Image (tube, rainbow, N blue to C red):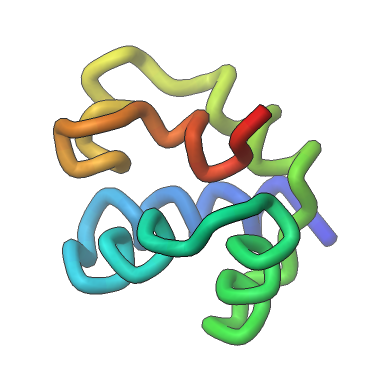
Length: 76
């Protein structure tokens, strides 16, 4: 696992609306991580959260399609 994979995953979330919608429609951290892995992103919750902390609010909004922050990829 690497932060590079987490960055690539978040970039995909920002640039691919269909992918983003599919991931955000899934409930639960484990299920969302499984979908990310099925899409080829070997990421952990901690890695995604670490990369999220590096992003600006505008970048977070872009990754979440303007609706909810990407933080909700890993719901509490």
